Length: 109
Image (cartoon, rainbow, N blue to C red):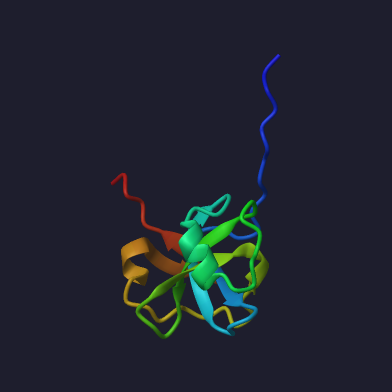
């Protein structure tokens, strides 16, 4: 018989609009890590609320800026505004904004 693996359920997916609970900014998910992937030094310096490392983390383009962030799932919620994100890298990751979410660019074509 095979081995059992841990299945991690993520709350958000690429292209979904989110709101940061603590820092009150909107953004769009561009990538998902099923668990923390940055360095321990980064975690100690930046993740002041000490969110769990064994839960999902998200790469987010921040609305109205030119930077991205790395955010623990516990600090995100669905964005109620459901309007497009203003960020210079949106066109690099997504081809369209339809039905309140972004569509990822198909890199295979």
